[in-house]
Length: 210
Image (cartoon, rainbow, N blue to C red):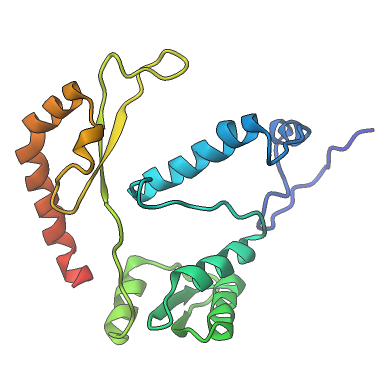
């Protein structure tokens, strides 16, 4: 039976997918299988922490299976403190739904409603923050990851894979004891340059995070 459609669904969500994606979905995965957890779940979780610049010894993440709204509600309910004031920039139904979720959770919030054809830009956010000084602004975790690549850093396929090390907000390496000796030698040579670079970044963002 031919399951191909002769039209394209222009709606949010993974509805119109390629043939390769559909083929991949034919494989059943069990959550207790080692190849599923170590081959799919673990790399995704580690990758998300790397993107956020967070140390996996201090932070973790949990994958949620559900709709976009489901994940948005989970984030608002878990990440926003009762004492916070949430800024929501909305140019459609999804943004307005975030305000409904915040109201349901009794979270103080400001909703900036734009027309559906208006773009949410940095200028829109800046103006909203100026008009609402009580909005919570929080910077968490590390915002710099140091990548060191050497010939003996090999991935499973034999290619060179850089080692990743988290830096704190002063440019200091975290968990030096976990660094290989040769990697620390590289870091030591660049230490002053790294610290100066981080200092400049702190100065750039100080007017936002004060």
